Image (cartoon, rainbow, N blue to C red):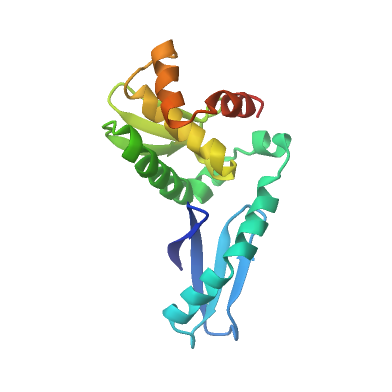
Length: 186
């Protein structure tokens, strides 16, 4: 199994490629947990498979949007230890991509990115510059993933929620108040 990324509407989306001796055609599956799995026949080369996946971006996006329409209760009730293990790598890939994207604008130095099973928060920022993200960030809509990322990056400069902090957040996300309200409701 190989892990790769595809960019859909500016969002880096991880997917798994499984090469199969028995498969006779390329198959894309968006699983109920949101993972994307590509089954590639052994006889098909990687370039052909890559072109096929790119041609199916719209379908993949539609399926992911359907998956993100989960109820608030489903999102809150996730949290078994096996879930963290299952999603940790994909959550890290996503968080790293989001931090790199937003830090091009903010330019705040940080030390590390970690993924945790945070019970009551979407992220945190330590005094030593470590950014921690809840693995459930994978299941948030893109704009809320951005909000969590920007929020934690801004804590690198201002460790509390003062007016100066919110001004930094607003510089990156002018609609931050709407996003903050939405994420608090989850």
